[in-house]
Every structure is written in structure tokens, then in C-alpha cells.
Image (cartoon, rainbow, N blue to C red):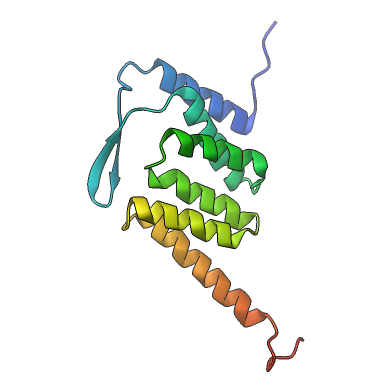
Length: 144
């Protein structure tokens, strides 16, 4: 009898966690941050799976407490990495918690002031705030 395969996001998380756990060359994680190659230990499969779960939840429009808890596990493992802070900001903004999202972006930028994804998300949040302010009625702008 064949075992049913997990679908969608579950399959991606399981596959990624399995790859991270079994890759013999996975002794470090390199990526470009502010024009410099940053090297860090490869996260354990549970942390990588938590990151993927949070990222997939964001992409699917499910920015709830489970996704925030998952990204918080990643931040706890790598608090100096700006990337999970950006994901946290995106999740918070999607949940309508804009001030908290701005605080998460401030954390990302404190860790890496020129970090492109954090700067881009900050610009996006600013644009959204300006658009909402322009749409909302003010004392000299009647509601339509």
C-alpha cells in the first residue's frame, strides 16, 4: 500500500528539512548581505522548517499567530540575521499590525543598515501609509 504524499506547503517543508539534514556539505550558509558574503552555520532542520512554514504562510496570505511563532523561532536561533526580522515585519504588516512591523524593520536595519529587503519593505510600508492617509477623510476632506 502506498503512503499518501503530503500536499503543497507541507511537502516543501518536509523536503527542505530532509535536504538540510542529509546534505553532507551543509556545514555553513553563505549569502550576500550589504555587498559582503555573510557566513553562518546552517540552521538545524527544525529552524529551517520554521522559516519555510512562516514564508509559505505569508505567501499564502495566512499571517496568523502560527506564522509569527515560527518566525520567532528562527529569530531566537539567529537574532543577528536581518532576514527573519524582515519576514516578521511582512507578517505583522499583513495582519494589520503596522507599528509592530515598523519595529521589526528597525531591528533588521539595526543589524544591517543597508539590507536591501528591509529597506524595500520599509519603503513599501511608507507608500501604503501615504496611500491610506490620502484615502482617509480629514477635517477638510469630506467622506465620499
